[in-house]
Amino acid sequence: MTHDELKEKANALPLSPGVYLMMDKTGKVIYVGKAKKLKNRVSQYFQDSASHTAKTRQMVSQVDRFDTIFVTSEFEALVLENSLIKRHMPRYNILLKDDKGYPFVRLSKDAYPRFTMTHKWAGDGARYFGPFGGRFETRQALDAVLSALRLPTCNRKFPRDIGAERPCLNFHMGRCDGFCRPEMTAEEYRRRINQASLMLEGRAKQLLKEMSAEMEAEAEALRFERAALLRDRISAIQALGKKQTVIAGLCADTDIWGLYRGSGKCCYAVLHMEEGNLAGRETELFTAPMEEDETEMLSALTAQYYLPRAILPHEILLPQGTEEDCENLSQVLTKRAGHRVWVHVPRRGEKAELRAMAQRNAAEEAERATTAQERVAHTLELLQKMLDLPAPPERMESFDISNTGKSDIVASMVVYSGTRPLKNAYRRFHIKELADGHPDDYASMREVLRRRLQRAADGDEKFLPLPDVFLIDGGVTHAQAALSVAETFGVTAPIFGMVKDDRHRTRALVTPEGREIGIVNNQAVFSLIGQIQEETHRFAITFHHESHSKSATRSALDGIPGVGPKRREALRKRFGTVKAIREADVETLAEAVPRDAAEAVWNHFHAAEAKAENTTP
Figure 1 (cartoon, helix red, strand yellow):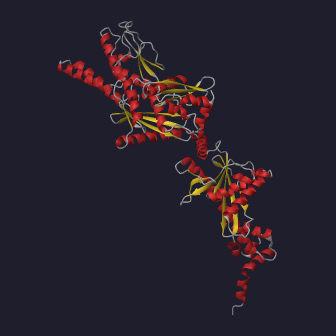
Figure 2 (cartoon, rainbow, N blue to C red; figure 1 turned 45 degrees about the vertical axis):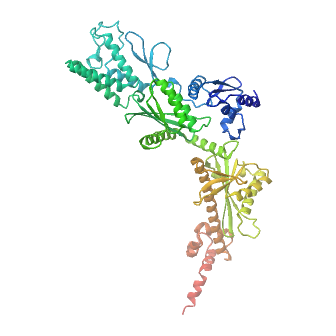
Figure 3 (cartoon, rainbow, N blue to C red; figure 1 turned 90 degrees about the vertical axis):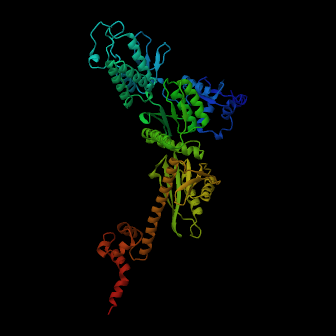
């Protein structure tokens, strides 16, 4: 379909909730989204692309057709969207790991059912719990549950092996009650299995309450041995709930979410809490290719995280989101869990502090896993987006003017390759063309840029290639001065002035047309532009000081017989300052120039003193 046909089809959609699927020419689904009002949402993709991100424009450019599925409510759209994302794995959606990374616990349907671990939920009539965390942690948790309830973990088959052999070592170690013995009934085995199931469902509190009541009943009936066994089992289950190695999802009643968009990587962190105590933490890195805002990212993440799970907490704290989003997710998860799941954004108090802790966990994990190359790429992509460049800038040149009054006016050209200074490409300029010799920053900037572009036009490799961006130290007028020169050479690279705040830090970039682009709120770009501005200023000031020192030395040595430009340069290199030359004796001066020249220099600075001494009575 053409762009106009896609736009016409989108405008014809109803204002109803639903899910849309974007497809390329091969029919492959490349993006799945949900909408409260399909017409408004889908039609936005085919309007003016100036407001789109670069990656959204890229996605839209590949759309050949789209399909829609209508539902009756927005939270039904949430469930369907998650299902379609899992099925199609679209390249432009936020995608978490698939279920193979999250083990399930399977309970068979045999007369003596057994717990096993599996990576997939199969429609075989068995009972499944999870998905949980990693395979190692899941195995630890399952072993701990079976041990606490003294259920068998051996390979014997029941009822086939009941009474066939003596109980194994687990029975003698007190880790199993020996269900291979004839005196242990199938009813007791199934009762223990049901108790283990309650724990795997996260209902340990209910189980402990029931067992405590049973223990008290046994004690009142004077069956103290039975009561003691229940007491020991209760203690084991209580200890199990306190172990940090147990999967947090088994016992958590509150999940706290943190979300961080970093330099190249994004990360979410989920802290699992049980009765106010931290039971565990999960983190996962992911990419957000569509550059959704954080509310949209959370919507996608929480749906993919919770909807496949059989066990859900009673409370979920999110870092942000609207009341409507929270209520929709709460309805979906409540229906899934069979109990009320309260989803909300804490604003103050202890829960807000927990939310901040989850945010820190997500940020630290993302920054730890992000490489230097990814940070560079992310920073340049942000700069590209802010300046509306066709691609991330590979080469940037920055210019600054430095002078003291009307003397020694100089300029610096600093080059950055990506985010790193390219020092072998730095260039220095003496300003030569000011008509009356008085400082004029704008005229100086025009001269520097003209000379720089002329050298490039002449094929001078020291001034090639041209940059992707020109950065001019100064405001809009400096940028206009640079633009007037660039236009005469037919150079179209964008030009921006670096506008400083009262602390001499670059707070914004400004176009020659006067449009300011604030950078203070974007730390990565703010740091990069500030570094470039400081390096350009440093290089200009250093060059100016060197030039001024040479001028001062040259003027102080002017007129000395036998001391021409080469000998003045030798003295400057040897002594550095006029003061050092003045204080040196003839022998020391003779280390830099011939002796007769050294005597002439000494006499130049000390003739008046010698004359005064000779006339003293």
